[in-house]
Image 1 (cartoon, rainbow, N blue to C red):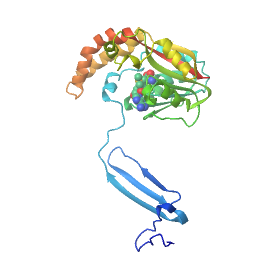
Image 2: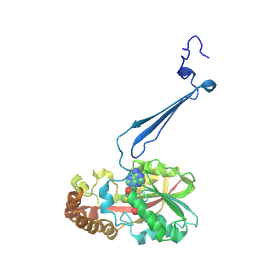
Image 3: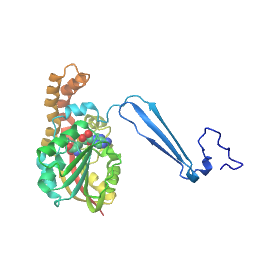
Image 4: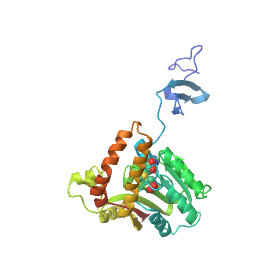
Length: 313
Ligand SMILES: C[S@@+](CC[C@H](N)C(=O)[O-])C[C@H]1O[C@@H](n2cnc3c(N)ncnc32)[C@H](O)[C@@H]1O
């Protein structure tokens, strides 16, 4: 089998071909188990049926389960909607979309599943949600049971970055989690890859109600800088520049912000009472002490939030 330029396999060796002759190159499979070891296997497929296969198990450090930072699972554990949109406005949006029964809806960053579950109940949609929070995903499944829509909606615990559905959907949404695609434009690109022709993209995103007069005010709204967000007309113009028509929108208001932000305070207080010695107790205590003032001085005054309905031109 060996030519004059190739070493002949010695006794006991696998007949490994020279790399220049490897046709189907090599295939490396690895799988990180949450706890324990990395089963690591390399298969080298060579011409004329040569095959080298070796397998080993490499001990690795223990990985924590995939999740969002625990502080959010604590402060938003009682939320059904993890945004300033209210149940009424979510219903308004569902009606405004004129959804057909059986319409497929994909939701990246689906939270506790309220949008998909209520639209499944009210409009007969078929939904898939992906969320990185274990708690929120479990809550979404429970909500589906509560509303009797478990045969219509599926909730996957996982990282939605790069998620593309097998089947093209009628509505592809990312409501308040556009970091998943690296920003609004990247998330729209990601959603578009799951979308059928003529389908609808939903983007939930903040905008400035009033432009912060200083960078410190922007920071008070938990933005890194003023340029993190746009004023509403600029936000809409940005969709136009990306080649999309804005065909609807539902905007949150300050009452909706209160339902999202103020609802965290009682949750925090009750959690602190029940978990005084938890490692996050100090952080939660500090948030409970500072958030009402920060929120009312900054976010409530300066930040708007909306769900924008987009169709590619
Ligand atoms: C502001 S909340 C919005 C949740 C939901 N859309 C709603 O309106 O209730 C953002 C959500 O994104 C989820 N999330 C954050 N990073 C994620 C990722 N990489 N992949 C999937 N979900 C993610 C969080 O767990 C959280 O549920």
